[in-house]
Image (cartoon, rainbow, N blue to C red; front, side):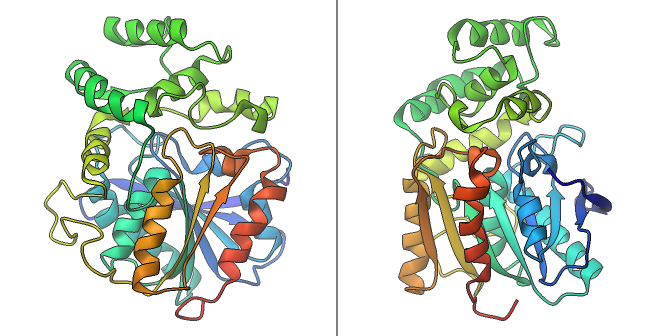
Length: 348
């Protein structure tokens, strides 16, 4: 794995939350424009730099892109807060885009967005809040979250119960390190019911984000170093976010919950206020959001502008191993590059 220098450019959102974008420096100046990678819930920007031979960051830099990683309010690098997708869409992602544009002097840029970084960034794009972004590659879920039946049952029954007991879940909890009796009891229950591996963080991740064993990846797709590295890459995630996703799953599309005037109440009820080109990716073995999620969003966009956007279902992958799988550089990254190189409505 190549060693890259980096520079961190901080920003503060209009509602006072910290954020930053991390500029990853290659050995030579980039020959292509900026592309920003956006992480999901309860992780951080570093999730795109797993200990594999070639990361997506390495691959994009090697092919000339100017790579930036966004840390938004869901990042475990920041003090926990009870965030929702609306706040990220209105305050975090537009400010991150503005920060990259100001730092690079570019007129336009591209983005690769994952999970709840994807849902919230899609909200920004559809509402016309990130007009500088011309191509958006979305992984796992976008405007139409669809979960497996067992996960839906868990959302309806267990999530409200857990929310009454604690405001956050944290995959770092184990029987000895959890902060209180309730958290230790939950960690013990997960330990006793998940037998897929001996990595407690891996097992807690599966409980937190779905019903799989495991939920976010296939163990066969991860090398041993990555499976161990994951112990330090997951942290606090608020139940406030899960409540919004649960409502959105029930409605069949993302819904706003914070009453912010910049966002529509119903995403998908009107044409998007962007001419960006969207490429939707999903692992066929995703146990967090099933591929129908991305297929539905593609059909929505394709109905508005036929033969412009794309959708790809990756047969050997799940949720997060799309980026950190030990063969992702061969199976997935060339597809992402192809999508970034496909012409959009405006030159990038």
